[in-house]
Image (cartoon, rainbow, N blue to C red):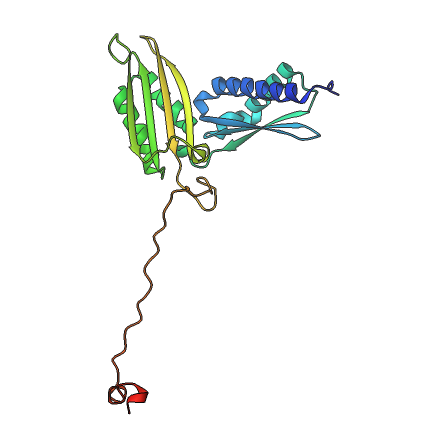
Length: 236
């Protein structure tokens, strides 16, 4: 029995709820390969679907962790009892998920791996698993006191237009290193999938398909009879 609010306020409130929930889950489940959240509102209850690469850790022992998260969300937003439910969904192809790869790179850097080596490792893993292109930007104080940005690219990557909304997965993370903050940005261009499972269903608008040439019908040699009947009919 929520008070009647204007459409404009409702959309703003929904957006704020999603942003806050996403931020909370991002911080809580960063080690479990958190890859986004989806909120579905049904007349009976609100369903929150958490996408992650390691769903077992998200669920916890006998579903304990997901129940804790449900209780936290319920108390924070004042949902009535049993009106909100959290589900964990496994990401099929974690190489094409920018969020999961960004977190992976973050933990590599926190573990003390050199920036260049960590970036090339992530790029190779993404490209080997069927992505069309990838770009990794890492900026901040890398080894020296002077801050700089390093850009690593591989494959084909579009950056504008309508196809960008469907083909590019992008994620940004911050790493708190001893020298200061580092920023990581991962952009992945997904490959076209006609089924729409591993990538976008919509083909690229400038994609050119070259068909195989048709079989040429061999030209028959004229027979002896045809050669004798040469000339026009009226010349006889």
